[in-house]
Image 1 (cartoon, helix red, strand yellow):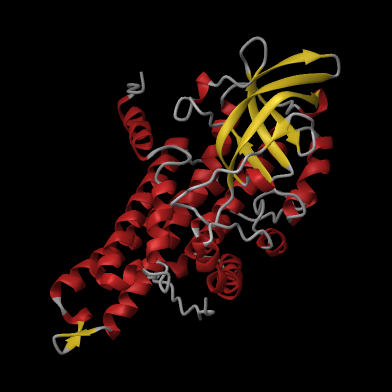
Image 2 (cartoon, one colour):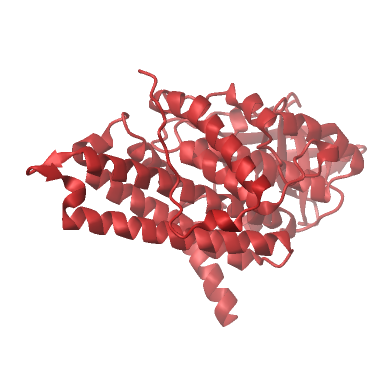
Length: 394
């Protein structure tokens, strides 16, 4: 496939750049330039072949996209949450699978080791994860327990200085290539604990998930534990219960809230550019009312979402953001990105389904992003419970 030039220009209808610091804008530009140079030219080919571009892992590490909010002492970037969000926006503008790789590494693997791990665990794992020398994954979802993680069956028993771990996790991003898995399992009392499982431990396998129509350039797999002996020193000492994995998901959902806007921006940019160049009935299709309606609604929704996630970033930076606020932003961004991808595809007509443009790949990817880390409906019910005080899950 011929190499393409990435001509993306970011929409900023309400001059939101004025709300960003120079450092935040510098972070965004560095990731945007990386995506233009190293992701856009290759990603369609990898998606068509359903292959993960493994070489980007060390590139993302060098760029600082893994654990950007983790302190520099452990190899992180020591950045604020708006910088992290802008990074995810730019990566997902390239591809949702690329952003997933970074989200999982930073929010679901490095964050729990930093927040709940021992100092020895932090020093052993975080620098290698930050650099991209090691890739990590997060084991919570099971074959029979997705939206209801409390029902998990993965469990362990103690055996001297070790635990014996049994069970299975599925739909795990990064699993086939992961050196490290942060796995959530129940002890003999039924309490959920976090365990760092390492590649090479006997009985630990990571079968690849095949046949995906979505996130085709992302590596997805299972985690299977068959009497895996894990040292007790690999248990995260400072958290018990579902608070552990759910707090990680809050951080990752924050990244998705920003990332999905990147998808919307890319589809909008593509559709706007195409509509000005495509002639029908003697004029550019951008001059027809129905096409202008689509484009005007796209930029309106993008602008609203930009304001929402910027404010959420301010709240995250000051420690005031609630999980329910993050759920609202994740759900909103995913919905608008999926809708904008579909509308953009219509503006391009038949050309919209080809790999010459990014829209159809984004559209398929968003079907996964709508579902993972809390389904669209579950996030709606989180808002419902927050505002009414009544739990509709049971």
